[in-house]
Length: 87
Image 1 (tube, rainbow, N blue to C red):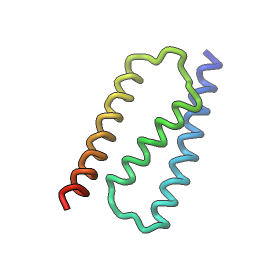
Image 2 (cartoon, helix red, strand yellow):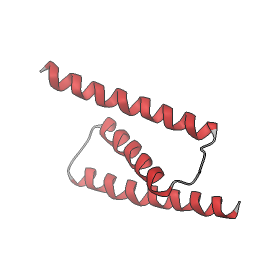
Image 3 (tube, rainbow, N blue to C red):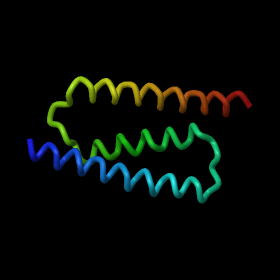
């Protein structure tokens, strides 16, 4: 149990560092679209999760969270691609 808590804490730490650095970069570049921040934060979560891998077998709640985030990310990307192709 102690090992699991350490991995979850590491996941949170890695996620916060990645998110803070990427959001700062977007802010510095003058990005104002909310969907860009959401998409980047979802990507940072998946990168953090892939690097740390806190669970050998993810609980169903984590699987549901991952599925929901993937759906939101896919919708955001599909909408942006549609906007580019529609022009």
